[in-house]
Image (cartoon, rainbow, N blue to C red; front, side, top):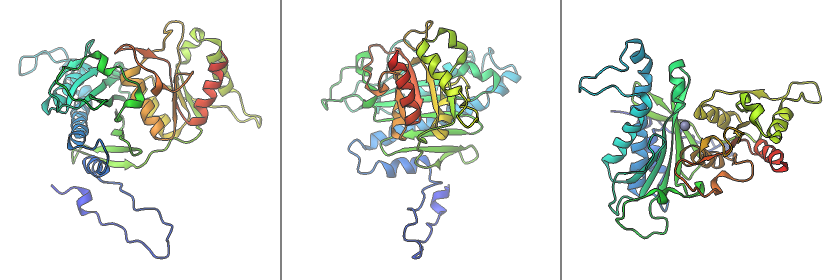
Length: 358
Ligand code: ZN
């Protein structure tokens, strides 16, 4: 099949415009982008590109299931037995098993840690399986019933960080590494369109899924988080549970500007992927601080906070626990929670100023 980038002709460089930017790569497929972007990288083995393509393939499958979810409910599919005689699974469990199944087909991924499973899932202990994958199969799945954007979050770690290969099956301890060790991270948002955003060493790029062609195409090249944004995103119903420093910070955002113009705008979806995606593109800040009912924070460090922290830093933004960089935190447990703020560099710096005073 002919894909758009094969028929695309490069724009001719005009001699009158010596300073015109390098020709855009908009419209290339994710697969082409991964293959070309990985050339010359130390970790850019065929296995790594193949693993990224597997994750993209899994995302297509989950997207297709998400797109049919409403239909399933309308037609009463849920809870019934399918043609294979299996009970139709809940969508988040289905997304989880889909991603694990795809990862298990080739032997690049030795083990996965997923939000849906208590223990690490070992897929291959062969020494040639060089990667570990962390993922949240369907973030915000409680929003499915009301047709709000949901998403998949993932990160890739090297299985042998010290270079020594062995055939010992991976354990939880292999996953307890700080976010700065990630080789790549990304997320898929199932919104008005399905989009995959990937940070794999050279900037952050967004790919929009064309369901007719069945592929992801580069639509958001080199995403950069604005230095400051107009909105803040926080669950204000927790205000009475916050420590005073968090309340002071939110009050400072709402305060009208000296010229009488209103303060910042609140934007809160309640799906991490949706709130983080908007913050990545528009700037501002998303925060889920600790509170008295979640004293160590609410979001999960390994497969929620770390992938997003990696992405935001790669896009020129910031990610903080309130006390320091998220990617520096060394995890102690697989499903550990952490206070998280993501966003524009200056907005996250202000947040830290308030929280450090506490
Ligand atoms: Zn989640």
